[in-house]
Length: 457
Image (cartoon, rainbow, N blue to C red; front, side):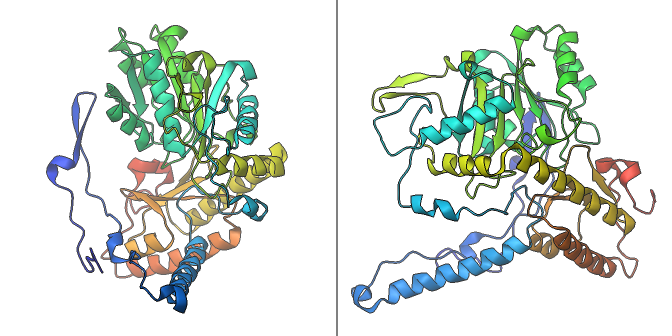
């Protein structure tokens, strides 16, 4: 096979690629374990033989490849725990639309000359989210993105356009796309420390604001961090901005709500993410809690901010303030379909189920002597990293340093959690049976009260 590198060892990145500059300081990155090179398993594309049309061999070959692939998808779906994707959906009714190339070119609110679009569904979905976050129709602008990262890229871009000399502040636990945005837009970026929960350290935030009082602040607020599921205290963040002397016309807040941005509105006593507060934009992913089968997201910002980005495009007979231009026109239909089927009541039930099952997993882990943490308002259960990469890959766990996590989504049942726990305990007994290996201390990651290593039991 062309490009095959079977049995090749994964090499560590060179020293100069393992460092990055943030806030004027060099940050050294630890070595990480990368996945296998896909060239070892890729399906080669080859030219058809002259007699393929008559023999049907090529069609039979492709059918067999797809059948094997479908079988592998079924198997991998059974053991999916570490990433925030809701795999419980049925969009059979939308199969009739897969024969059309639906493309929402340009602005969602202005039709282009390309007639095969789904703007009528897209704007309906955007209106739903604008109501959820309490912004009137005539005061918001937004679009359905191709992924959660694009929502962050757009939100931070709007902030940069509103404040061209602004400094981007983001907690160390923010999604990597936030720091990607800083690199892409050549923005000065200040990393803010976090509490052990993963939530932004607002005292450190204020201290760093005071060091840069002469420049506007552009802030990423996490509505659920990537690894620990921590929710930044939006009200306290705004308070610290005001205490540092930043009036509302000197800061821009983007809320990254990739997963929990759609869960929090349905959690009792949860703080509200609303445009009645001085925020500039909110983004969520559509393929996470909603359960869209293709990556997509929703980005909402204030209409008054978008003029600095928007421009007329004669070729489209429309305007454009998006990042990608061409956008998947099928995604809005999938989102519209789910929002109509489930509604507020359906989402509330699914959120309660996820939170309940997350508490079940956390309690079972701790009963088994395994350190674990579950943040309030979160369905992300953090625990000690398994010792075998094979086990990690089987259950598709997301890991960072000494910790791993399971994100309990609507498709994660108690039965699946029990299967995972049973297998984890069996493997763990082997890993630590001779006493040569000890369970890692994760106190620095989850706090001493959540660590059950030999020193903290």
